[in-house]
Image (tube, rainbow, N blue to C red):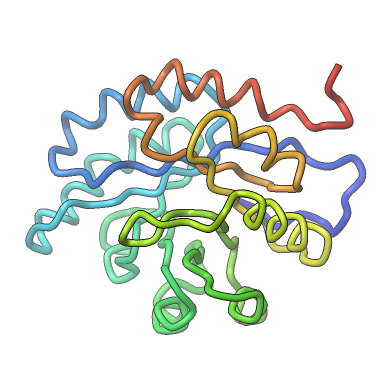
Amino acid sequence: MAERAKRADPRPQPRLYLITPPVEDAAAFAVPLGAALEAGDVAAVLLRLAHSDERTLINRIKTLAPVVQDKGAALIVDGRADFVARSSADGAHLTGIDAFNEALDTLKPDRIAGIGGLASRHDAMLAAERGADYVMFGEPDAAGRRPAFDAIEERVAWWAEVFEIPCVGYAASLDEVASLVAAGADFVALGDFVWREPRTHVAAAAQRLVLPETAA
C-alpha cells in the first residue's frame, strides 16, 4: 500500500481492501477468502481474529497469510502488532491514536502500520506525522456505530486533498463504493456484507472503482 504523490495526475486507480469477520476456523475461511481475492483487485486484507490463546491466533494468521500474499495482497492483522513478525503477516491495523503510538516501534520500519478509529482530524494528522502507512475513515466502532455517510465522504475528500498518505474509505454496502472513490479514497474497504457472497460482491465492488474522470 505505497504512498501516492499528492494530487497525482493521473490519479492512481483505487483498489479494494477486504475486512474479514472474526475468524475462528482459518482453514475453512481460506475458501471464501480465496474466492474473494480472485474476484477483484484487492490490495490488502484486514484479518480479524476470534478470541483464543496466543498460539492458536498466530497459527490462524500463518494459515491465511499465504492465501492472501500469493495473490499479491498484504495481510494486515487487526490490533495485534506483536503477532506480525511472528506470523509472517505484512502489518497491523490499530484503532485509535493511542494504540497506534504504542505499536509503532514494533512495526516500523519493515511492516505496515495502519490506523482507523480516528476521533478527530487532529488525531488523523498526528498519525500522519508519526508515519502511518494509511488512515481509514468510516468503519464501525465496537458497538457497530459509524458516522453519517456524508461526514465520511467529507473526511475522505479533505484527506485526499491535503495529505500524501493513502486513505481507506469504509463501504458498508456496494452503494457506497463509487461515492468513496469520487471523494478521493485510494482504497475502499468492504464491510461484512461481502462475505455473504464473496466472489459476487467483490466483483461488483471492483466494477464501481472506476474513477469519475474516466467514467463513460
